[in-house]
Image (cartoon, rainbow, N blue to C red; front, top):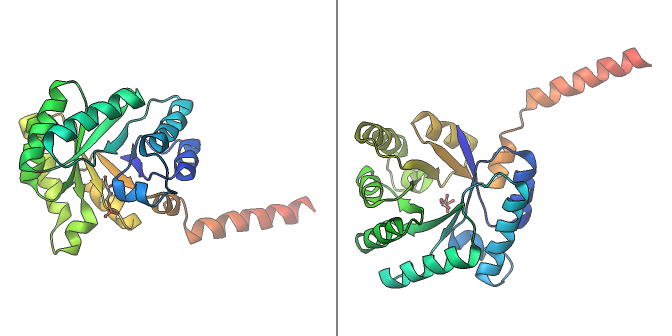
Length: 222
Ligand code: E4P
């Protein structure tokens, strides 16, 4: 069960890296837009610095915001050159024209995380064009009456049967139960916000047990 942090917040990144529980970081333009206005690549460079200081070379996904295929390719190349981080993955939304982008980037040796995915067919196309990761949007699919568990299960089976090496990232996570659901369905990775990852460590019975131990021990010590 691999966990990624879904955030562009520097404090979230620092807090997560300090605990060692994450195996990568994903960002998207909406997450960036929550941060104080800054130079885009300047902000991403700060995230890269934190990851480099951690020393594990964790993967970082950064999404292109150009919309025409040629411009997306050029922007992806600019990110690669400017950030100079070997663990960088370029996020490209799924789409007919975007498949050209994925294929071109893959042929340039640039790892692609194909994002905004809602169906098995989109996963297969993205992986076939060379994406290293396919990002399925779990709760956004539930919102429109879809069944993300089925999509993850089917995609995992198709990938395993076809020998696709692409990994399934499950994003759009809103509750702890979504994380377990996504992993059990066969997602290789689940990416979630800092709050949800933090909540995973907590349980009322844990607090009660710890307090009980401390109380018993305090009585014995006095
Ligand atoms: C995944 O890569 C996306 O960044 C993300 O999980 C989107 O989720 P949202 O529905 O919380 O915006």
